[in-house]
Length: 402
Image (cartoon, rainbow, N blue to C red; front, side, top):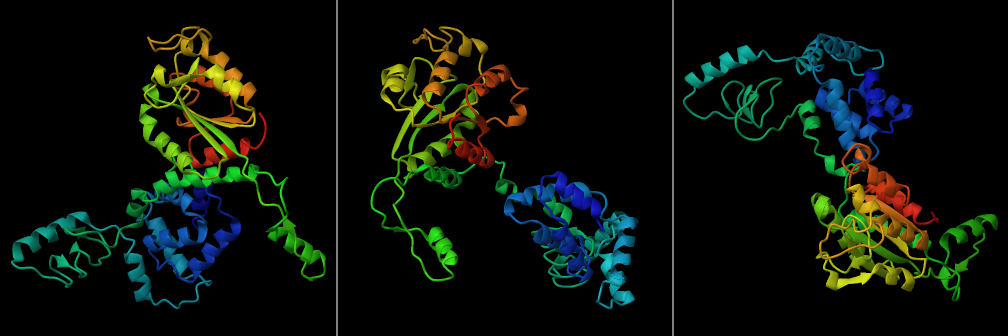
């Protein structure tokens, strides 16, 4: 039943397994969806979705699959057959079955409108909790905060939302794993850089729990404690951020990354520099891009060791002249003797542990203005989206040389 819904979930990228699907079928056979589409929505999400990061994809798949289907005779017949199926241990009576099917029927909107007009003409005082008049907390088809198989909400808030409406609201869009990040998510992702720390020096005075368990198992269960050296923090990071111009729409997400990196205590050394569109002769100390508050890029390259991890944040979308020409920089008060691409290549050669984070979605990298320069920058640096998945891939890439 609803097998196409299984494939709809898979098309949205949700990792639904056959075992989970069979579990859902068993739950349906036990009547746990209460024979309502809303019940099915929550039951299927509970059984099939393993992480809130997929809730939004689930809502999209649910909306696409059930839109325009929930009240068709075919679905009513399916539910009727399902209720009467031998797998269902609940002995539904005909009256109970008819009531459950009624919950899925499309209301007669013309009749409801006619009845509403009659109620408005006849009702002269508030009536709450009843089955007929306009009011709250009853079973009347008119009012709010009550329950009716089909009706019109008047005032108040909806308490018995249809499953399609719930799915259409996409309340979990912010939980998607491919969405941009908050400060906390950045901090967690950057913390993974601690894996790069070494344990080569110092006394072995820290318990190695995993090796202790392994050696104890190998020792026939007799405890064998293993000690190791504390992890030494040797991580050195340089964050280079594009600022202004086409990066203005992404200022908020970039400021989140800046805050997360600045708050992080996982690095032995941490340096910040700014640039606009491309890196040239100068790297700036703050977001004002003031030449009086800058350092020569050559001096930075010469003074730092090559074991720094470089994280560059920018859209890489610019006029080709800005990347390829001498004096391509768009600041009137500055000139670049060498093309920006030359500086990027030097940076990549000096720091083999480097990545580029792009706030533009990857699907647009080959179609937007600046796609040519994006491609040229990608040929120099590994480029990833500025999303949770992208940052996770970038952190993994920083662990190996380019």
